[in-house]
Image 1 (tube, rainbow, N blue to C red):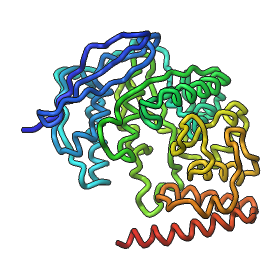
Image 2: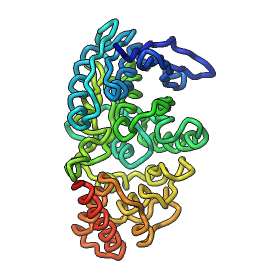
Image 3: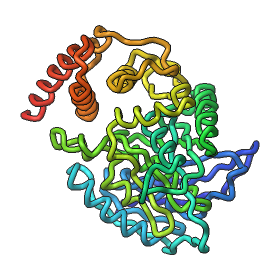
Image 4: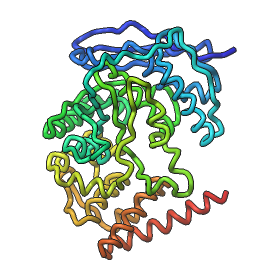
Length: 380
């Protein structure tokens, strides 16, 4: 019977970098290396468990409908959670099949009564800035986490061959987090060389990187992408790759994955981080522009973020070189439904704040056009 095999490889140190990898054998024939690389000074944070590789390959197995055999150590609590994780995604996407995962050794990772420590992924965008700011400033009440660092991952939104862009973006992120007393840890991975549906798998990509650092942290935050208010739009957004239902199911007993900030809209997040000058200076939301270390000011994400600031009465932040007008809004391409939900939210905030400027009229027209397309698509 065909299976996917995960073979952990020896850790390699070279040029002040440390690489953790596993050979992924797909359907008993094709072998590829999945690797994670970070500065050697962070080697004490690494786990020897295969947990990160199991998380990273779960969608590969579900897509092929084949069981997974791990030739190493895996946390049984993670395997238990992944059973439910698969159940959820198989309900959402009929082409994903539930599979069995077995390991040569099933053992929980030691915690040794260590002090609780938290790390969050940090891209430099609105969601990650909001998560960093509210935890560093202790604004979270009972859900407060002892955040110590942000993890910026090269190879996900900034491709591996774009080294200079990543270095420039990381420099901005380092300065941004330092202003809160937080450390920036950088990591690179070739996860995206395994061809998969990115909108479904980006949550496990992020979680696997966080989980690799469970030698030093006991929890990892994934900043929310879509707020609770928008998750039922056309009954589809809930199945976005990172969401509050399945992110937590990527946890083990010794390392908890936490979906953070879904109780806030993007506009509410912008209003919060507007108090943080370093964030306004260095915010990086753009992934479509040619220069990935800055905001192009023309793409949908840039335009939408500018409107987030505008609708709460804030001026153009320093991270954007140019402002937008009605023509920019009306010339945007067709939106997917999650982004459409954000535009609807911006309009609702404009109404609440009694804003009826020409840009609001343009956005209303644009949303109406996209809503008609969304309704037509849902009937086909």
